[in-house]
Amino acid sequence: MKIAVAGMGYVGLSNGVLLAQHNEVWAVDVLPWRVADINARRCPIADKELEEYLRTKPLDLRATTDAKAAYTGADWVVISTPTNYDEEKNFFDTSSVEAVLRLAGQYAPQATVVIKSTVPVGYTARIRQEMNNPNILFSPEFLREGHALYDNLYPSRIVVGAPAGDERLAARARQFADLLRQGGCKPDVPVLLPGLTEAEAIKLFANTYLALRVAYFNELDTYAALRGLDTRAIIDGVCLDPRIGAQYNNPSFGYGGYCLPKDTKQLLANYNAVPQNLIGAIVESNRTRKDFIAEQVLARRPRTVGVYRLTMKAGSDNFRQSSIQGVMKRIRAEGVPLVVYEPALNEDTFYGSRVERDLDAFKQECDVILANRMAPELADAAPKVYTRDLYSRD
Image 1 (cartoon, rainbow, N blue to C red):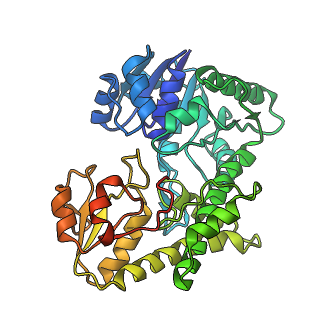
Image 2: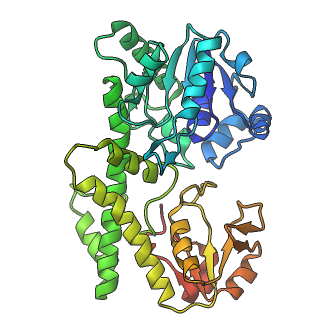
Image 3: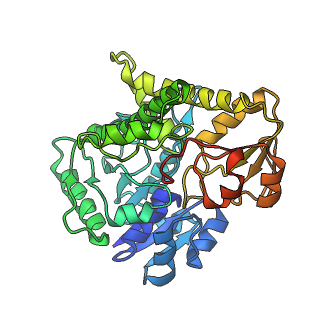
């Protein structure tokens, strides 16, 4: 079975590798260097399991920039291209998804298309009509950056949405879910086959709940910090309640990364003309948290602020929309110089701030060091470090 996967980020590459264990997979990307890496079995992103599988597993996987070669004769086309949030339009930019849909319609009109890119609620039903293509499903992705393949090998659930009442596409949705299960390592994975729009809503509401937990424990931490209380003592006591649990409870500079900021804003936009208070508060809480962190750093009257790592979490090389960047903007606006230590950066500056590659020189130069997550290599500079990390984990 030939499967074409468009977009080789975390979602696309992890799905491509998963499916290539038992199928012929063509990975399509617009970046030649990324294509070259995959064909050489080098992982272009930081992900332990992806690196291992590319290096050691017998995968039927080839990467290309040639859309015609990839899509022609494909039984399935999986779309995992980026859908960034457009602040002006107050909506996801789905142009990359539509570009792939047009190419799939041109070269593989017989293929079933599965959208895995995150889209607004109601998008898939609308685009099926606009493009006159009935063979489109939506399957949300639930993965963590740096653990993308692991979360596909051991998924919490598999969701594939199909149009209500369409038995043909419902059968195709079951087939796609079986393809994902076939490549995984977890025998009893819950499989849900809701309507298209319900599947889209599952994705946005799931991520917004995660953002809610981050925002909640950050606001708890803000309260404790300003009242002189022990944040960890409070969180430990709260989270022993099994209804609450001890996950997603480590204070931070705010929720960030590629998914949570844009997904919460998109869900809020989807609430147009629908009564709500909570969803808007989650988005606003994240802004308030960054304001608070910046104010706490500025209260130390630093001469130079160091930024230790732009990435959101350990094991990731991605710093798109990382929360620390929002704090940086606020500090920079007050005229305080910033120096960045980020091994994943090749540039000498980052948005006007100098990049220092020598960690010892970085620690020596800065009198306050911002660290969203503490690291052992900062131990000797601990008095300078400002972090809200309590548990030394994600």
